[in-house]
Amino acid sequence: MNRLFAIIFAVLLLLLLSFLLLLCLLLAAVDTQSNGLFFQKRIGRYGKPFTVYKLMTMHAKTGHKSIFGTWLRKTKIDELPQLINIIKGDMSFVGPRPDVAGYADQLTGSDCLLLSVRPGVTGLASLKYKNEEALLAKQTDPKQYNDEVIWPDKVQLNNWYVKNKTLKMDLEIIFYTLLPIDFDVDKYRNSKSI
Image (cartoon, rainbow, N blue to C red; front, side):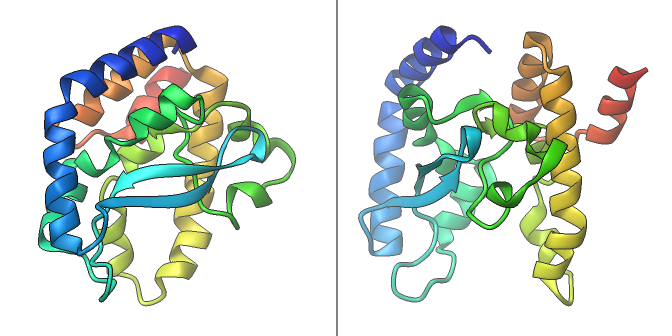
């Protein structure tokens, strides 16, 4: 997606959604007993760390998901502050999701291709693993399952995206991100690879 278009669209969305964002920020602050914002270092383009912005969904004192926070995560409204990351140039609307240190910054060889683009608010891996928390909760060793199954699949999927991305694909990814339906990412990828 064109950088100038991404900035203009992010500014417009921020203006249009400012009331919703401020209301959710206030409710998140009350619900989590915090300032309502969550800041975390993530690995961005070229492996450069940056601070990602989200609405707080975990209770500040207990570390458990708040009631409102569960809804924020389910609806993805907690991601709205990342419009600021897009305006700053840290992120784009579509691309590989930025990960915490210890994953993307440890990639080597051709796997590093996913670091050649700005990370996205959404992407193919986000669509495929939109229920990642629930999937990991079912595992006896969630970290091992993530490290051995989910993470390698995300790397492969994100690198495929970087090699094949088009404006049409970005718009399709945004479209399916906004719809509350399941989207078969593997089938989509295979149809594009034929």
